[in-house]
Image 1 (cartoon, each protein chain N blue to C red):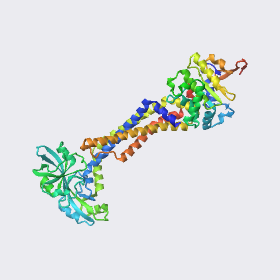
Image 2: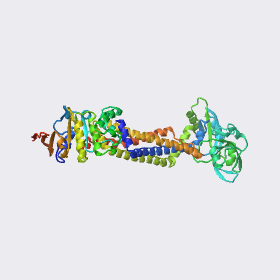
Image 3: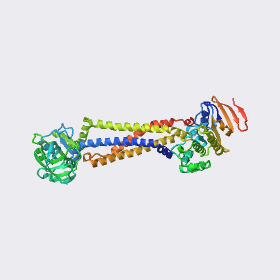
Image 4: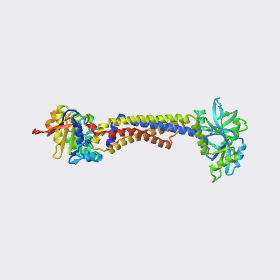
Amino acid sequence: MYGVALRMLLGDRAKYVGLIFGIAFSTMLMSNQISIFVGLMSRTASQILDVREADIWVMDPRVEYVDEIEAMTDTQLQRVRGVDGVDWAVPYYKGLTVAHTRGGSLQQVIVIGVDDATLTGVASKMLLGSVENLKQPDAMIMDRAGFEFMWPDEALSLGKVIEINDRRAMIVGICDASAPFATFPVVYTKYSTAMTYIGSTRKQLSFVLVHARAGEDPHALAARISAQTGLKALTWRDFALATVGYYVKRTGIPVNFGITVALGFIVGAAVVGQTFYIFVLENLRQFGALKAMGVSNATILRMVLLQAVVVASIGYAIGIGLCAGFFEVSSRVSINLRGFELPWQVAVGTAGAVLVIIVIASIASVRKVMVVDPAIVFRG
Amino acid sequence: MLVGPSGCGKTTLISIIAGILTPTDGEVEICGENITRMRDAEKVAFRRRNIGFIFQQYNLLPALTVAENAAIPLVASGVPMAKATVTAAAILGEIGMGDHLGKFPNQLSGGQQQRVAIVRALVHEPKLIVCDEPTAALDAETGRIVLEILKTAALAPDRAVAVVTHDSRIYRFAERIVTMEDGRIRSIRMMPSHQFSEVS
């Protein structure tokens, strides 16, 4: 009878397409918005995630997330280095300033100052040049998106010069950094050079990056650093989560995306529920006839559920395919949309939501079919 | 044949006979089995095995072809659709529907649809065929043809056909005419010898 159920479903083309469209639309909207939200939130921690070498980030105790910087005195670096279990510790500067191109245009840039000796903290994937080039005078490495933003119609190249705080800065390398939350160009330079870009202040050190000695538990070491220095020390993972958590709690972004996702769910459930209910209602006589002819309630139930599952599966496949296609195309069309992708967890979660939608849609319909009196077929 | 004015209880009675409705009182024995004592699942299986249905509105599944519609009772019994349609197609051929096997119900006239319904009622060789106003939606000539087909194809030594009708033009096809009034059987008339018995 399952073949009959499928033929009944496919026989009503308009409703079949409507059901598929409803599920596909709902899937696309939910998975797309959640993926963008996840992508956006991971952008807030992109600079933490790009520094793969450090186990622990040390900062002023009042700092809550990576973009809220309360500078420390450079002596704090030595205090951190003195904590037992620290393999190495290097300074890390992060700030925002304005760059001038030779054409006279202005552009706000994120300046990252890394340790002069080890150059720890530069995004690891170099597209042009090498990290070692930073040791040249006035050298800086720019991220690819920043280069394309500042020189939109030009191929990636080294040797371009910009001015930051009246200081000359020459591009000696181009890297593929993770997209930051605010899509400003990211400029990596030596810590000492970064200090010349921002001017002299009493406190300049944004963070201290720490690598734990082999066999040392990073959480235990972070606690020890905090205890001995009075600074805040977090593992890179905890700091990334704290940064994401800050944006989740303190901004309207989750509410905004949450509303869209909820709308996707509600519209999907309403459209699919109503269409499926009408589909079953219009076939009620047929189901009644089948029951009269000796088809059991259990078989009828399985027929209706099969119809629901088929519609959900096809709609979900189309919706999730559209979502994946959207990210594939959008990341190619605009570099500013890089990093937005469909995580498998979102795909699985959306499948769960679609399952709930189809269960909601089926409940009323199944109930109607279950209680239909087979004698309905004798009523003209 | 079960006849009587509207609201007299014909449909209720035939629904009880077919095991679709459960009587509030009394017992019903059909094909030698007491169906009032059966559980729901047993009744469903009983109907599947023993009863064929012909409805006033045909109730063919619009998404299925003529042959597939006629094969439904076999499919419900677990016969694969391909095998069931072969069986159904053979009977359809016998009643002049062989050229319409692949058509859908909306491509057929009312008379043709009722012929498909007749084959659907016969295909699993039930012991009882229950017909509810089988000619009500048909013109006189088509109704006559359909009844001829029903009489030829359905009547068999071990089979009964119960027909609910308002259509006095088809009384002549009956062996017995049961007249109902206000929920009670008023008379059972034997045809064509016109033996007559009153039922109090």
